[in-house]
Image (tube, rainbow, N blue to C red; front, side, top):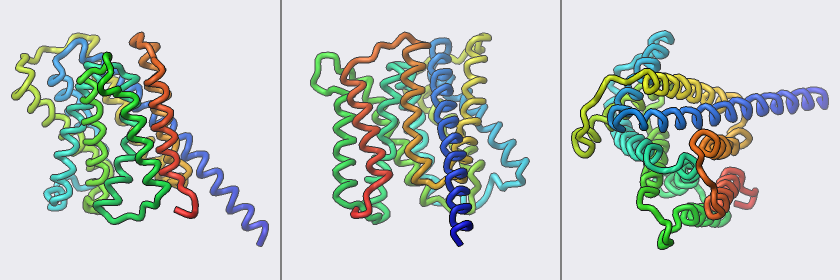
Length: 299
């Protein structure tokens, strides 16, 4: 009995370690994807980056779905949760990529880390999930961390930083809507429609705000966009591997390694400067997020 128990514990530990490694790889790939998207916006209009990036991801995910013989078009795609998910996805992608283009990568990545906190808050109100006082406290602390980064009222506050905040709220809404989406829809099919939403975001931005003509990407822009799509697909695949390999409670906290990767790329690739409020706010958000994900037994 003890031998079986020991082997079972060792197996769980090995699965968790594998899942953690997949999660770290996913977060690193997502950060690299963000960096390449940001680099592409220096060469092309934001709307064109959105459309081309979305088109590339849509094609690759569609190829994956077809290779797995998964149904891309079905009645479930037109369900209400999927429409709501699409609206949040368009909002998230549009404002997040605008934030990448116009604000530091490090600050944008830091604000994005508040997404799990908002998801837990939304799950409490929308799905009636139990949230005890410890989690409510962590949620409040997490929002304080966001305010520390944004610094509203300070002399160096930039309204552009609100772009990342809106993008983060959009991603949280998308994740909540994904939970309500029909389970018959495969993960790769969700990926297809997620990237279709990016195309829609680009078209809307071009029609309503940017009004800049699209141009043929030069070699640098084409390389940046191609790399962003490839790393995006790799990141998404690694994330699915992580969530299906180890225990969710063990694997999910390592989502916050994206902050480390994003900040490092911001400093090294784009010469960004880190200040005390950004560092302190990031630490507060990460601490609050981990507290929410791993509550005590009394919560």
